[in-house]
Amino acid sequence: MNTVFLVVVLALVWAGISGSFSGLNLLLGGVVGGVAVLVLREAFASPKALRRIRRVISLAALFLYELVVSAVRVAIVVMRPDLSSAVRPAIIAVPLTVKSDAEITLLANMITLTPGTLSVDVAADKSVLYVHALDMADKEAMIADIANGFEKKIQEVFE
Amino acid sequence: MLAGIELYFGGALLVLGAAFTLLAAVGVVRLPDLYTRMHAASKAGAVGGGLILLAVAVLSQDAAVSVRAIIGVMFVLLTTPVAAHLLARASYLTGYRPCNDTVIDDIAQRNE
Image (cartoon, rainbow over all chains, first blue to last red; front, side, top):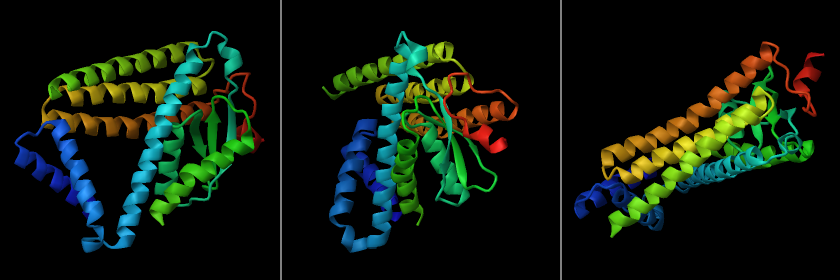
């Protein structure tokens, strides 16, 4: 977390020096600061902390990408004239390998905002997440998709 | 020069966000049951609202407003899935069954 703080400070310093606090300038300062921190990382950050930050960023990037894809896909489905044949809803049980409440919450939220899936319920013993799919083609493929995508990345961040 | 680019970029974000919000509304009307409707309302709705807030951040030319708009985007992305999940869960627990097109219902199998 120190590195993130450092990048924010560097961005503010950049904006202060260049005399403009506009959003674009702050963003530019953040990018420059991030590159500087990346280049100098051995000097002040332990490799483990940095790896974790990289995993958080990679999880956030995956999430934003999937979010845009899912919104576009829902928008396309909604515009189709033959709507009832385009949707094949299903509620399926996805077995969970993550165990802590924080991880399950994060996973459930991310599932809701990603293509074609919406989390409905968690089993009382936290072993299974019930997911509603808008257009289910292959149950096994969908379960594997969640397990290998978000669940794995969340585990990496929390380990 | 830079201000001109911001204007076009912000305008494009605004139009895109409005389009997604409109499609989310169309989806809520057209889709067959609550669960499928939540797909449209949560995903397209969150992206639409998020894009409009991003447009505010780009167009405001004021760091204080921009930062608050971006924090607003984060809160939209944090709260929308929770609301969608709670609506879906509450309606399932009160006995609202998924529509007849639904292929598999693992919750029903659990309860049997």
